View (cartoon, helix red, strand yellow):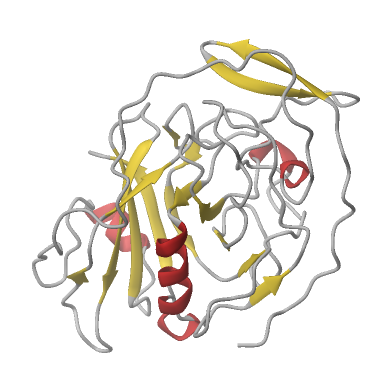
Length: 274
């Protein structure tokens, strides 16, 4: 599919200093009143902006070793009409026309480790089929049902997946509208000192507090800036995010080739047990 191009955002270099708060590194953007990581985040100011390398020491957060392979486990078997781990209220929020559901399950409410599985069903069928589970990261402090800008938690809920983009050209077979744009840039270091380069090579916008049908770089926030935004699926940088979900580049390419607007894809996000 031909890429849908937005006007590139202005590339700005921001000086910053590191600051450790509660065992997690945040970044103070000089000249602003906001604290935000240059890593994957929930505000337009952290997307499409080139940031200098972090000055001073980098704080580290304890985390479990994550599998380095592309895929884990086996395909998930489901009962007809049901996706494992979803309660009735959550199932009811999945649109009736949706035939692709990406389920992101965090290890617990405060964990930044999660697992992603794509479930599909045929047209006019109630039988869901689970794919293979992939390792992923979510926000550094885990999850929340009331996401706010800068809370370092990923929003829980059911959201549509309408638009994609990235610094690299779309993989052959990409079906979602794709903004191939040089403004998808992440540089500097993440919370655990990992490099961020390439994190926005491929992104899929999660329709949380954004305008579907626009580039992931679109800064509009229908619910207001305080509710955050810019929550994406993007390439993993081997560390926690500010609010996004990150997966290996191979998985992002597979999702871009698989997710189809005609199948009305949605994402279901939250910790295990909720």
